[in-house]
Length: 136
Image (cartoon, rainbow, N blue to C red):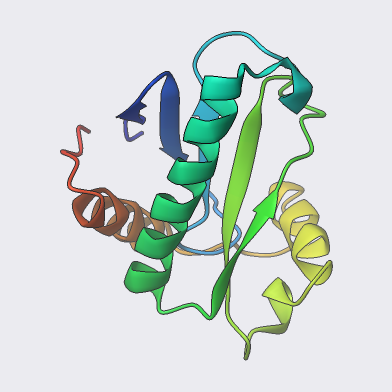
């Protein structure tokens, strides 16, 4: 498993656990304990916005996706974290709310996720695009 990337100011970037629903799916997580977005300090919230922009640009560059969806559920892992999901216009698995159905099907073993090597390569390329060293 790849170690999370430390983005600074208390934020980590992680690849989605294998199997990832689609290659390039990442999570941005606050290091300190906080269960809800309204628990963020003003500085943390501002930093989160800057990081979402930066990481989204890296994911788009690496995956050639059309845009990056941002999801925040925090049901299983009750800690502030955001899913950054590559959205490819020609891929119905990532079409709007269908991405949530695809996520559920992959995590329940009903559908195959992205090949592990493809997901690992995508995360390594995102790290490189962000100018960060990747530790395995």
